[in-house]
Image (cartoon, rainbow, N blue to C red; front, side):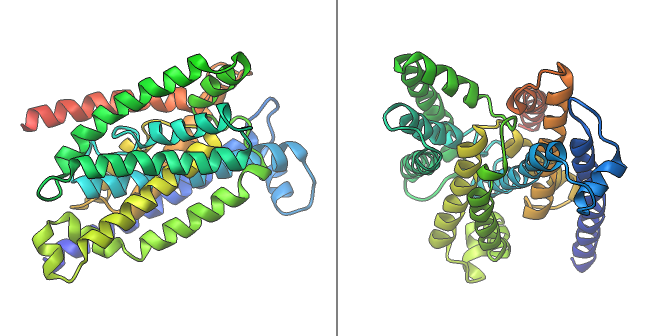
Length: 331
């Protein structure tokens, strides 16, 4: 058992040693690439403060950092719900939390004045309401992860229909903005959009890191968790709050970016060789996936920059087909 533990730990360390340089490389490429190419030497000069550059510092840097932090947040949110449900399909975008956060944001846009604060609060409330509904409906004589996933998929379909109705009933300008925002994009992210979301995500990730061991104990089974002193009800409530908070915060700024939360935890788990769904590999994989997808979105139809959600959905769709095929064969 100890040997296995050492092997897993070493693979995780190796994975981190590979993913961190990959993320740094993607970040450097993101700072270099744009309407005009900037050499790495120019980028390092700007980062060191030797040369000012509005393009690199004010336009590209916020986008790169948003991809890094938002990708990590989505990866952790996916890992949380996949551990909670013990199902690789249990991610926020599949079980309806993205759609619920989008509903809250749509209400803020159409009913209220649609300020950044209102959209952020609306996203969090919408995600929490949908999460509470899914949790309560799936709790029947005990908690069932499979039941939660199935009910979540059903609620996701219903909430998506509600979102479509809200957009159709909205004023034309609001509807166009809402539809464009719903694709999930980092195109217009600036420094002013990142302060509060980064703070919220940092607090949530730090809080979840303190409960990571208990989460992995719970993933082994309720009996194992209880025998090791884990309070399952409190832990599950915390996991849901952190997962919804991460998802809704990203949605409030960038829109619902699909499939990063689904794919990143499972890719990270397989690369790390872990039995459960560890948080650190999921976070790093999420950052790499979102940063890579955003670069592809910028390059595909350059100089037009596509929403990153278009690319992540295409990549995630292929991953979902592979995952479903594997699950069917296993069954």
